[in-house]
Image 1: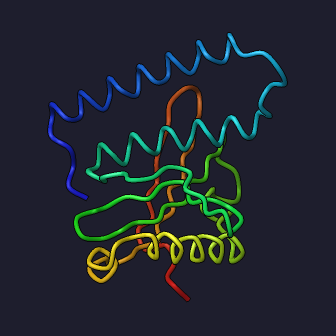
Image 2: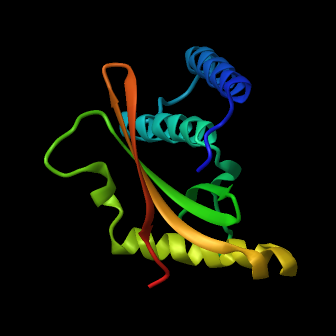
Length: 159
């Protein structure tokens, strides 16, 4: 991935900061049942991965993409040059014996592959023919208020 330029990086940083502020205000104003902490951690990790991948030059075209006929979602979909990337994000608040990326088991990979096929069918013919596909996994470790990222490009394939 080609990294974003200095001005673009500052703009991405400003967007991330503003979204974080809005999220904090929304959470304080919200009424009703609280989001489970593990779900909130996952959403925070997906948001952090989104901005980190944008900084690295990924052109994100979809977040939490779903299909009415299939179960599950794809956390992020984006273009890295002419490569269409389907990205699964796993977030942890501590490093332990099993790394975050190990949670992308065969069942999850099959789900992402099925959703990728559905997404490709939604593209017009010229985009579908030209698209090369890659499946990535991003591990996000949010520890003591800082996020660390490990990006595994081509983490798995179609089979």
